[in-house]
Amino acid sequence: MSVSIQSIHKTFGNYTALDDVSLEVPNGSLTALLGPSGSGKTTLLRIVAGLEYADPGSGRVLFHGEDVTEVPAGKRGVGFVFQHYALFKHMTVADNIAFGLTVLPAASRPQKKEIDDRVKELLRLVKLEGLDKRRPHELSGGQRQRVALARALAIRPKVLLLDEPFGALDAQVRKDLRRWLRQFHDEIGLTTLFVTHDQEEALELADSVVVMRNARIEQTGPPQGIYDEPRTSFVYEFLGEVNKLDDGRYVRPHEIELLFAAEEGVHLAGRVSHLFVAGPVARLSVMPETGSRREIEVWATRDQVDEMALSVGDIVGLRFPELKASQRPRKTPEKDDPNDHSI
Amino acid sequence: MSRPSATTESGPVRWLLIGLAFVALSLFLLLPLAAVFVEALRQGWDVFIKAFSDKAAASAIKLTLLSAAIAVPLNTIFGVAAAWLVTKFRFKGRSFLISLIDLPFAVSPVIAGLVFVLLFGARGWFGPFLQEHDIRIIFALPGIVLATVFVTFPFVARELIPLMESQGSDQEEAAVTLGAGGWQIFWRVTVPNIKWGLLYGILLCNARAMGEFGAVSVVSGHIRGKTNTLPLHVEVLYNEYHFSAAFACAALLALLALVTLGLKTAVEHFTGHTTKGRH
Image (cartoon, rainbow over all chains, first blue to last red):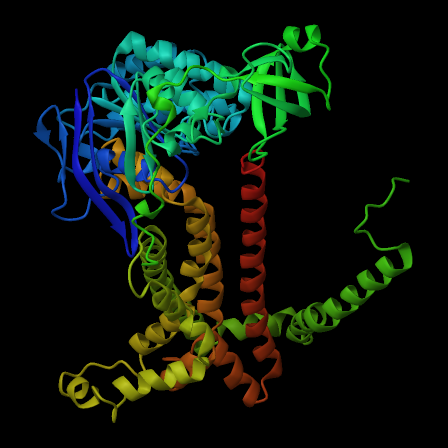
């Protein structure tokens, strides 16, 4: 089921959370809403779910072409997974998962046996077989997250919405669960929209990334496309570390070639001010000998640094890649903030 | 001996503080309580038992139980509704409403009683209308219940508001997205989450409802055997120099308070136990 968001406005008192936001989410896609806190991404997700309503008369939300702007959350057929799971603490895992089915009106409610089967099937799907009698407080964070997912899926939603699904988990669990969710999505093919502030997560997981900032959408596109060709300086900076050169170019640390200062093709010479080796990667800060003397981050391999026998204080040469159009992004206007009432 | 932590006082200081607390507690809490029971039993069990077989005493006990039986359920409903409203919704005047809930704590109970006399008394605002229709509120059960409801209004709400505030609306929102209706959410998600706090609030509310003196005193009219509640009966007996009987009734009230406290502690213990391991 495709989701279409058409020029949505949302204000809370004086605060503008969404400013004329439009977005198309194709059927079966896995889309990330990426942005810093306060960018409006969670509000947008909650409006799609029906947990918030857009400002009256401002825009529409369509599910597969059907206007659901005024449809209450419970009737939209969305599965919503909350950042802190929001599991029913007093219920067992099985009762949590079955909740959406047991609250159906008697006429359309499945038989008890049917509900039990569905719960078993979902437990298998999220790989939590045998935990049906546990209570939420007896589960780990990752397990709770999967119970929340199973509970959301029990009502056979047409759209799955996840709010910072991995935000409260440890780094390792987060990585595992991320891969698992990708596989899971590929298996069941449900249109999924998730919110995150972690660019790595968005780039690894999503088919399509929507970068948000200050209540607006900054750029939309496939992860690789967005990473390689950011349209604005904000997107460039938000998607990963980047150096802004004196000529206004943006260059990622791994795109810079590390050479000896006297070698041919060196664009800039500088002194290594900081050197940090993490596993196979070496991260260097280089202070240029000339120009603005703004430190430049360079990522090289550990092998190369060893081979060059580099240490802090050495002079190195830097070589920048060929200029691409995207390396001079449109400057993100500073006066873009709808909540900036300074004028 | 294990090393004391940084916040632990040295030995002598610790004992001094504990000793002071013990003396203060004994002097202000335990001693009066013991005195009530000692005085009540001074003239033996027979006199103690006889104090309750008196017709006026029996009527006072009945009236106290009856007014609490009406006031406590009413305040439970009001309290839950008020707590639900101010914690699950954001609206203009919300903080004003929260302060309003506390009003009965701030106002002297005597004033509360007087307000009802002013409204429903013979010369009050609605007095002529009530007299015309032969409805008695002041100096009758309705007045006593009204005064009790007013004074004990904050207990349930006050207990629930911080609890529901800390729980947030996440679980209710989850239930909404799963298609649950308002009643289903209330009974299946909200109530199970607040049930111990609710019970705690009801117990406190009940203790105060049975013990209320000031407000009830103003509206009851002290008609012996008719509109005297147990606390009022104690006062009447005491003023008439029936010390043993007065203390016997006081002992009964104190016993009610002790039972309530016992239940409250049990609830605390039980919830403390069941919430262990949750975060």
